[in-house]
Length: 137
Image (cartoon, rainbow, N blue to C red; front, side, top):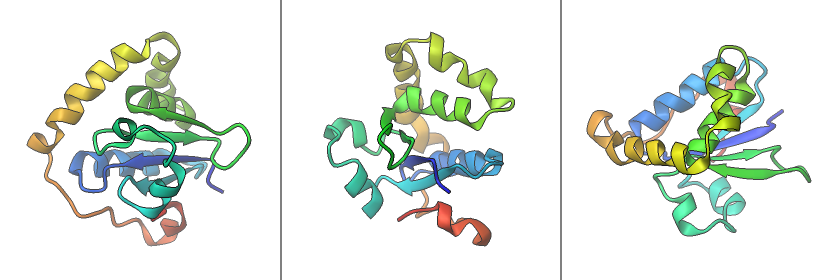
């Protein structure tokens, strides 16, 4: 059952690799994934300001479709995802609690601005056949 959804740029090679890394590390299968360009993002993120759901933003909806649902973007979304993955990822995720958003977002924007220079653009991720239900459209 999907507990959290990660929204990502579906045309970004770096984003694809990060999503596949999260997917492989998610032993409890609590994360779902959806491209920012898809129908799920259009429905779930319609109330976010446009700059927060741009192709440069990673968006995490924690506690997806529950009364406790909350939305995190950019650096905080990445660090919270690490924390929720648990295990060794928690060492990175601990920064979610002690580093302010303006700092994490500063570094996030540097990487986001340059991601297409270092990674090829892609059409979309091809999810593993056994886990296609974790990849939303």
